[in-house]
Amino acid sequence: MRYVCHQCGKTFSAYRVAPKYCSAACYGKSCRSPVSELRVIKLYQSGMTLDEVARATSSTAKVCSNILIRNLIPKRLAEMRKPTTGKRHRNWKGDTASYSAFHARVHKRLGKAMRCDRCGLKEASRRCEWANLTGRYNDIDDYKMMCVPCHRRYDAARARRSRGEDVCRVCGGPARIKGLCKTHYHREWKRNRRKERSA
Image (cartoon, rainbow, N blue to C red; front, side, top):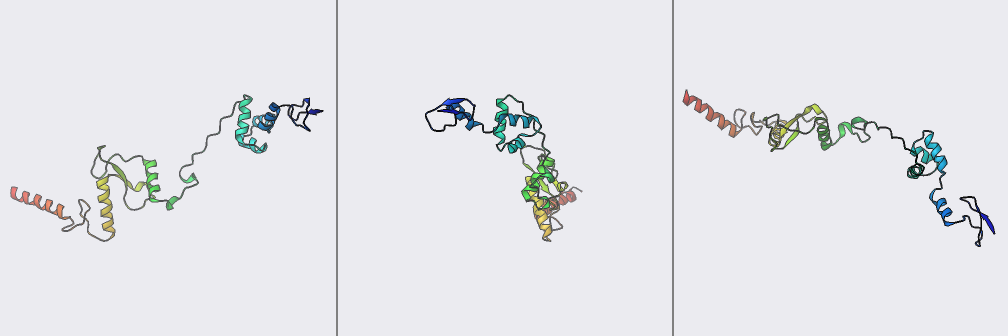
């Protein structure tokens, strides 16, 4: 009996009842590209994107891309995306962000802390950090570069002030006498004693 191939249109004879394809090659072609290659090319050349062509032909962007590659059709460059940082980002939380997110913003905007603004340290051997000055973490202008010891002392002094305790005006430790901690009071006392003896 004679049949017509569904893929290439040739007539062929077969012993099987109602075959659809004349050969395994035609069957393979029908399985590989159920999408019309000519239609994909026309839609793409009309100005549609790969995603739009895939939606129009009920296939995927990868299938359409492979069709274009097989037919040696150059792809258009994708448009540059708009920057999605800051308020334009879909996960932007504003003032309700976490402590680490505020510090990440500071690092991104101001860069890495390289020196200490309190003690003047510029050595690479000691680590420096961005220290918040008043507790307004969302304000990027409210940060200063400090080495780790200065940062810890500053935070401890701020915590003591908030509790109403007296703070040493030199190191930020707990103040004992005349606004100084025990160590700095003794140093000042010794300095004054030396001045009295030399005079």
